Length: 324
Image 1 (cartoon, rainbow, N blue to C red):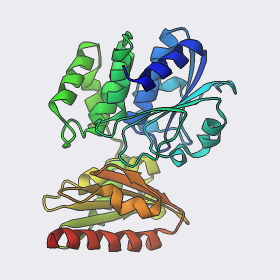
Image 2 (image 1 turned 180 degrees about the horizontal axis):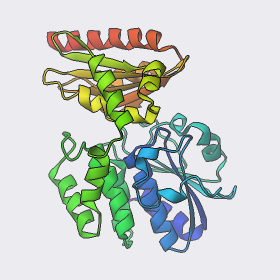
Image 3 (image 1 turned 90 degrees about the vertical axis):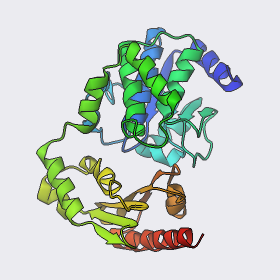
């Protein structure tokens, strides 16, 4: 057991109240990891409060324990435990709560991690933060309930693209099997992750796909989701989840970009890459981050301005890669 894990174990043994926080625009890795860790804490007789920045992600309602998320305020003296983010800014309206906590613990796997928190476990080689939480619980000799196993399986399953991305190693597959043996509902997770969409989501995906632009002989593909498109589809912004996966399915794609108009002066960017293109490099100047193959950013600027800036850099990166 590492020194950091031993110190965190000491904190867990000593303290009573814990605020487990997922990042904004929470995904199954962030919220699933938080719920699984909270499940462990409550099993020890601790009080664990799971929160995500507004709004609560409805697409993750299938995760065990979801009904208690954002329901009960944690006391001011609660230890904060943050999951799956490389920067404090990723915790949105809950950032002040983290900064005010007497102690903050971080579990993360992002390549762009800035290093924050009083105690942290950061493994940039881990396929998901859920992998880190699972290994932590195993190292502590903890009992992992079927609910926690399902949450961790969802975390790993989604962050590997259903065990399809190149972060899917033999070790990751074996870990998934171990979680299945512990009671993870693997079929249910697969169904809810990729095979259960409302009509509004499909309508929005169709709009975004038909609006896609193909550049540089299909090496660069990009599209956008505007507020007008959301209104036409009667969809929520969280229903953009999955559009970037449609873009990156293009056989010639080296860089796929999704621009989302979250407001008149707020744009979100999602990037996926293949080959030697670093996704996080494309958004680093915007204050974003992530992984080599997947990254994102949130920019306080109109969509058109952000789009031109990002596309200009993407074209330069692809041309540079071609020369090399």
